[in-house]
Length: 106
Image (tube, rainbow, N blue to C red):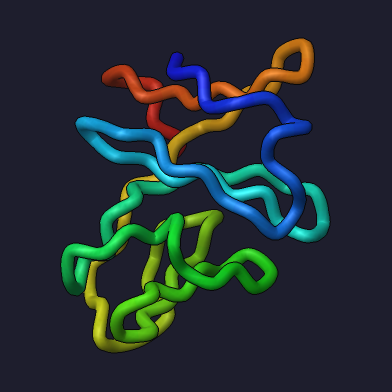
């Protein structure tokens, strides 16, 4: 597992980028959910951690492709391919992402 940060260091509505490979973005939604997806937009090389978070969706900062944080699926053009999703674990207030082979959430 990869240590991301503490829950206190990632307020709701924010994201943190974990350098890779692969680069992973961890999001804390306004309703308190934690999600981790591949950080690179599948349409063009842009960090999704720098995008706009709305509910369970993140919008790429370059061309407005949106991805579902729960599934990694794009919700429309210009992105056609999904980003990988990863399981998130919170242990004693620390956020971890599972990234080893066989540990992916989807």
